[in-house]
Image 1 (tube, rainbow, N blue to C red):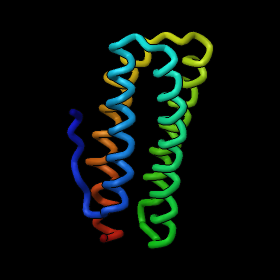
Image 2 (tube, one colour):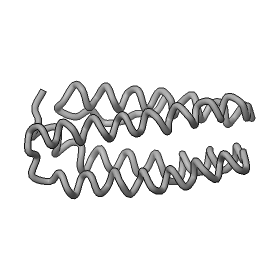
Image 3 (cartoon, rainbow, N blue to C red):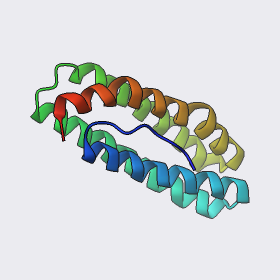
Image 4 (cartoon, rainbow, N blue to C red):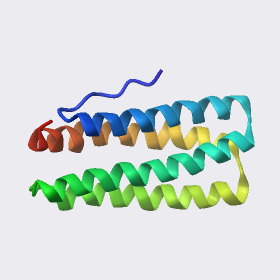
Length: 127
């Protein structure tokens, strides 16, 4: 089970938990080599990531979070990277590349993002 740090905001924690659940299912589907299940979960992760980022951005705007532009820029960077990877997945359906992307890029990015940006944002927003 993947362990992600908690932040000082219940909504943000729930968003992270939803995403972690999808990531764990996706990693399991990759291990099983189930292309159809990986495809379904890649769709779910793509949609969930947008909900996650958009919800956080809406909260930051609502509470006038001082670092909103920088936090959003981090989201936008991963949105772009994930969309490019997602498009490649749809063309090639290479399960091994999905597993590598998650383990080598997305999970480390998400952990760092939570530690660097979400924890600070959550303290500003409160619970």
